[in-house]
Length: 263
Image (cartoon, helix red, strand yellow):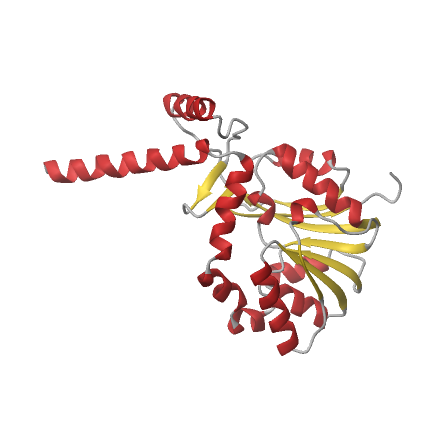
């Protein structure tokens, strides 16, 4: 191989290593804010609010979740409203929708789209990890896409689940997707340097294997152990109704959970 080609490959590897280090200098809330910069971008607003996406409605996979539920109507809390794709489709099916999104711009886009398609929803600017809604108010909570994996640290994810279970009525259901991937495998030296950098910078000292900056745009935690996911669900008090991980890695795992009738 020619010298310049060798040099190019070396720089690519150095770049990948630097990218692995980037996550370590941020604290959990910095990682969330880093991700939200992507969703506040004008291009994201256009992408999630575009007409073709709205008119596509629910995917076949999303419709299959409803088959797991006894409720075919009722109050549904949509966590991650986006441009209103899921909200509009679910409202047309007869659900009474409350949608929340951290982005006021996304909420306004969703309101615009729901008016255009003639459906009514309640749209609120809220962080789904810190819900401020009445207890025991919803029959179903639905966390859009793999947003569960966008919450850093197991502790924060379980706290988020506890807030969600709190707003569900007893017996209510929660639909959740998460990123499923192969177990990460980095050389010992790289793992050591990453953890050392987190300590030196007082950064991401709670780093967990599977944490990444997806496409250098947003934080995601990839699960690779079914036991770990189920422990988070049960740790928040949920019962598992349906749980499935994909046969192939780098895809979506999915679960339908239930709040116990008696706690």
